[in-house]
Amino acid sequence: MADGFLAPTGRFYPKTENFHAQTARAILGPEGQTDEPIQELLRRGYILFVGFHKPGEPENLHADMDYVLGGPGHPATEGQKAWIAEHVEELSGKQQFDINNDEITFQRFYISNIRMFPWCRGCAEEKARELWGNAQSEEKPKRCDACPAFETVRFRVCLKNHFRKQPVSFLYR
Image 1 (cartoon, one colour):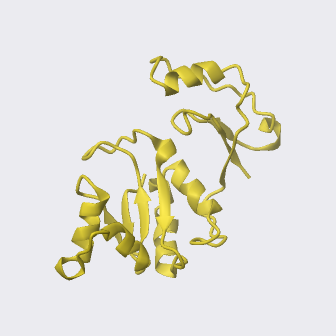
Image 2 (spheres, rainbow, N blue to C red):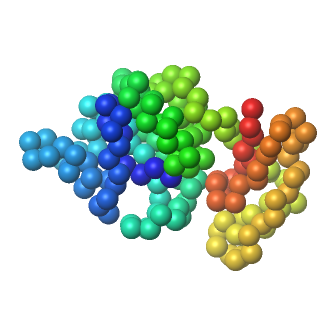
């Protein structure tokens, strides 16, 4: 999962501090200090990548909550698109989903074929997934293979970390 800011030039600034605002202040430097450093970077055309993990640890705690956010009125630049295309494997599935489905910042820029749909409601593993997702069970749920679209796609993975409250499937188009 990517966690930091992507400049319009295509340079990525990873979040090295405990909070995104601290990283944003470091990027802005002493001349650009403001009460809203993240918003200021978004206004300047930066793209924010948020990944939920403990500071200093790479393990993602809530992959379903990761997101990508661009500034209003700032479509992704060619430099940003090039960085994203080169680092797709570093993005969580949710971040890829955000980029694939964003019609403002990314305007039909598809980096992978990840799409998510709520197919799993009512499947046999729903209760096990809910218990595990709410930390009421340590046993991870099994892959269910019950998706109604399973036969129409080459590959489908039931999520283990994504959308714990509302299990969904990754569908590859």
